[in-house]
Structure formats: structure tokens, C-alpha cells
Length: 205
Length: 267
Image (cartoon, rainbow over all chains, first blue to last red):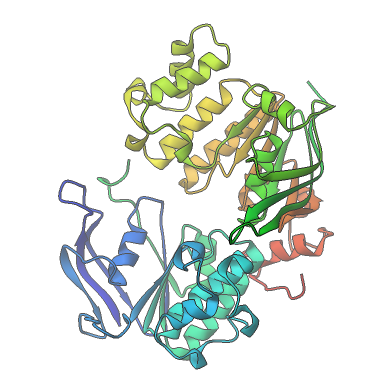
């Protein structure tokens, strides 16, 4: 289980709290939706869960222990909205995937076609690059995946295709998913249950 | 105040880029855009990011960078205009409501920027017009003294709307005006665009959110990978999409969460 226990976070000591004692639990293999207006701390919570940000108080545990990845990849992987910012434009798709340190044999070929491997990010479409981005996160065999607005800039057909592929992979591998989006109908379609996060009064502008 | 205000026919845009050394290559960014907007209409231009929607707006306003090569015809108020001619109408007759709040000057107060817009639009009392334009959108006089970084996303968006509408444009190109806004603000922004159209403006609403577009649009133009593929009637987006003639438009509708989330093959 991926669990946040009484997590508090603020970006600086003179900034308002973004997370105020948040609790959240995701079972292995579960898809949990998280929605709410912008500025509500959804993405911050996702970053804390994936270990990109350290909570000021409280803790995040994976299967009962605080993850301390030194040489191994973090068991919670984060995927963001814009794949073009997540992948070095001077690397081919193969190089970007190989940089994870994992063997490319484990690559999900439903997500990434073999003939994309030797292309550069600008030589495939935005939807295809997002599939590469997802495949890269899955290549390190995470236990959990935080998908933060991963389809927000894609057309509806590409969105449906990406989610179908992702859910299939996660169901097979027993990966728990936190799906963050402002799009409630999307979450109701992909997630088993949906949490609505209202903005923290202090943080709302 | 009727008639076609904006016509775009077969607009193509290429970018010439240098890769290593002097090796040049041409990127075909727009490969055939068609769009017509009449006075009193909201025309929605719908497509994924990267499909060329924002680029169309820049091209229409004659704001493309120097390495762009453009083909096709753009008519404003029935007269064919080259890029330089269109640039002269930019902000005077044809106005962009920009997508990003980064279009505000970070070093100038909101009041100064809105007053400048009012001045350029020829208002006799820019100060009064600016305050009034903000007040109409629920922003008090204290906002005039703030800098852009002191505004929330929604407030900055309302400031941009105020600036874009001060010149009473005949054609308004609204580029993703609702992205990232809470639902209540989305509704208010779309209603404002609808009102402008009802008062005789031709509004082009650029968005990747099909559902939001359907609420206010008179026509929906679908674009994909640099070209427009279909123009549809919003009323046809209903049920299983049987009334939609183009396969890609139907696939878009059926792929929406709530409409089946179906992945169509071969479109």
C-alpha cells in the first residue's frame, strides 16, 4: 500500500501551507482518482508521494516502509503532462529509455513501437512521446505510478488509447495508480474511486 | 453588422530551420487550414496541442517569425490581406486573447498595462475605461496596483480578457481562454465570449476541450496535425455521434470519457 500519513508541506517557510495533514492510501493494483481546482495542491501531493518533495511533517510509506532508494529507482514513479519537457531532445527514444538502467527487453511493446526507438523526440507525435514517457516510468518496475494530468494536452482519441494501454499494463503488473486530473468525467471512467480536493483556503489566490 | 469578417483558405505555414551547420530543413507546421467566421458567431477551433491551433492565430494576425513561409489566403472583412496588412489590423479590429499569462509584462503594474490597452484603443479616459473594464469582471481597484505575479491564474486571465476587449474588436481570436480555470470561471469566460459575438463580433474560440466548445459555439472546426479536417454543427454532437459525418470527428466524440471512452482504430 502507498500511504501518506498526516503530510504537511509548504514550498518555503514564508509561504502558506499547501498540504495540511493529508492522509491518502492506494492499494496495490488500485486506480485512485484525485480531482479538484487548480491551486488545490493536487500536483504537490503527487510529488510528495513520488519522493520528489520531502514533506515537512508526516511521512509517505510504500508497503509499510519509507522508501530510501539509493541506487535503485524509486518504487513510486511520477509522470507529468508534458513529455517534451521530460525527455532530453538530443537523445533518441532508445537512449532515453536506456538511461533508466533497465534492460529494454522489459519494454511494453504495446506502448512503444520498435520503430520509434531510433527516432528523436521531435520526430514522433506528442501522444507517441507521452507513451514513451509512460513506458520509461514502467520500465523500472515501479509499485505505484502517479499520473499527473498525463492526457490533458492530448486529443480525446489519443487520451482514450493511452489510458487503455496504461490500465492494461498496471492491471497485469499489479501497479497502483494515482490519477490526477481536473477532468472529473475522465477520472470516473478510469478510476475505481475519486477524491475531490478543495483548495486550501490560504493557498487560493 | 453581418457578413463574413474572417476567412482563411488553404493556409499553409512552413518553418525553415537550420540543423547542424548550414544544413537546412523545412518543417511543415500547417498543411491546409480553412476557417470562416461571420459577425455574431462563435467558431470553435478544436484539436490536440501541436495540431497548429495557436499557430493559426499567430498567422492570421501576421505575427509569424521571420523564418516562416506562408501560403494561402486570409481575408479580413472581405479583403485579402498579406501578412503585413494583417499585422496592421492586429489589436485594431482583430485582437488576440492570448493563452498564457506570460503575455503580461511582469515589470509593469496591471493598471499601467490595462490603461495602455485603453489608450491604444482610443478611449478618451483610459484611466476610467481601465478601471471600468476590470470592475466589469469582478476585479476591484486594488488590482490596478498589483504586478502580474501577485494575481492568481483566474485573475490574470480576467485581466487579459479586459485588455483584449477594450478595443471592441470585430474579430477576437481567443486562444485556450479557459485552460486551468475552475468550472465557475470557465462558464463566465465562455458566456462573455458569447455576449461579444451576440453584439456583432466574430469570435474564434481555440480550445482542446470539445465539451466546453459545444456550449457556446455556432460551428465547430476540427483540426488535426496542421490541417482542418471537418466543420460540424454543435447539435450533431449527441448520442452516439451518428449525425457526425467525418470519421475523425465521430472518433473524437466517442472517445470522450462518458461517451464510451472508445479507441477507434484507423482514424
